[in-house]
Structure formats: C-alpha cells, structure tokens
Image 1 (tube, rainbow, N blue to C red):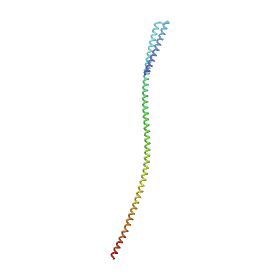
Image 2: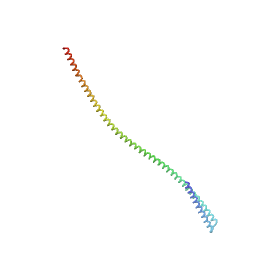
Image 3: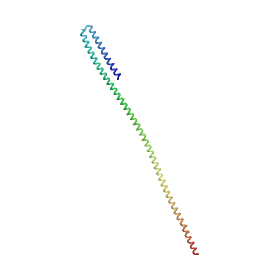
Image 4: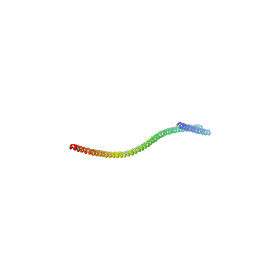
Length: 188
C-alpha cells in the first residue's frame, strides 16, 4: 500500500515537472519571438495567456493524477479485501476438507465395526447351531438312558416277583410236611 502511494506521488511530481519544463520552453520560445521583432506588449500578453493556460492544464492534470491515485488506492483496498476474503474462503475450505476427512474416517471406522459385528454374529450363529445340535444329542442320550432305566426297572421287578414266587413254594411244602408228621405222631 505504501509502495503504491509512493508510485502515485512520483507520477504526480514527474508529470508536474514535465509540464513546468514545457511551460518554460514555451515562454522561452515566446521570448525569442519577441526579441526577433514582435511587439513587447503583445508578447507579454501572449506569454501570460500561455502561462495561465499551462497552469490550468497543470491543475487539471494534478486533479486527474490525484483522482487516478485515489482510484488506484481504492483498487488496492479492494484487492486487499478480496485477498482477505480469499484467505478466509481458503481457511473455510481447509476446515471443510478436514471435516470431510474426519467424516470419511468415521465412516471407515463404522464400516470396520459393522464388519466385525457381522463376523461376531455369524460366529454366534454357528455356535448356536452347534449348541442346538449338542442339545439334541444330549436329549437323545437322555431319552435312551431313561429307556434303559425303565427296562432295568422292569427287569428288577420281574426278578423280584420271581424271587417272591419261588420263596413261597418251599414254605408250602414245609407246612405240608409238618402236618403229615403230626398226623403220623398222633396215629402212633
């Protein structure tokens, strides 16, 4: 910004210097024409008019240069503002890109977690299927054991009934023998 102001001032002073040099050259030219035979009054009047015109032109030129310098300053300020806006936009864009990167990382993490959960679910289903098969086998074994126990109990009951029936026969025979013995003794 300071460099632009220095350039503007240099342009203004340079242009003013050129105009002054042109005005002096014009005055010298008019002086030479007066010395060569022109009337002094007319030459002075013409030089005065020329000086006034040169001064007016110089003032207009200075005004134009000042206006140009002001326009240049405004343009420089607008450029700085646009640069600030661009920097802010870049900052926002960088922030948004970072947020997007974070979201992508979160999506990747969620995808990995989802895959792990699916693998766990599949393993759990396999374990459940295996457990169900083991339960069916255990039930079958229990039913077989109950059947064998029932058969064993039936055998035991049959054996007990046979033992009871076998033990009753000798008692009956012994009773009969006792009666017979008593009868013989009484006859005697």
